[in-house]
Image 1 (cartoon, rainbow, N blue to C red):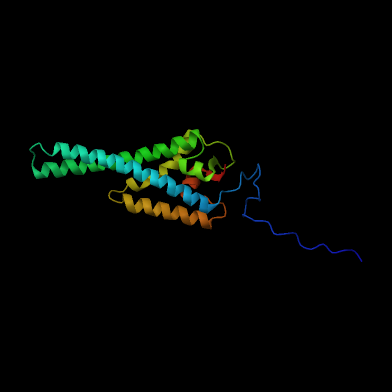
Image 2 (tube, rainbow, N blue to C red):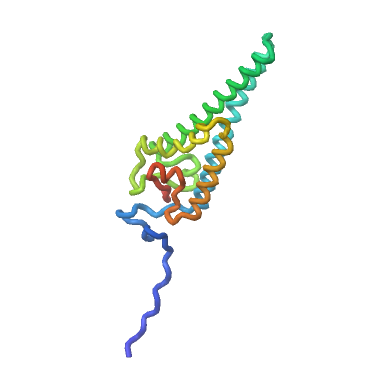
Length: 183
């Protein structure tokens, strides 16, 4: 009798994407844990930038507080300035994400974690696709007064997608037809 060949060892399988990727399916997706750490690093960068902008704003407000104004005028000015500063922070972060993705293929967090943003075929992301991908960050600004809640919903939704979708694509990736792979 002939020898029986046993089963081959199991290969990690991502439905729709063969192990190692291919020209047809693009590169394999990055590890969701590494993506999460990269996002946390980028979020810390956002917080540091936001704190810096707010410190400058607070110093300007304290310097201006010596001029005589009514309480209503001061409240209105503070609210408008606060809205403008928040909008500026989100737009700066959107530009950071877009420019880094289009020029380097990586944000600072992704550089540290050895990840790269590409289009779904593994090619470099165009500026338009990078801006579209990062546009998801501006969604929480559309409905008034939902900024923080909207930001958290998008982040949580992204984390769930990274761990549960076979292709590991977040809402940002789906919107711009991009993917995050190992560098």
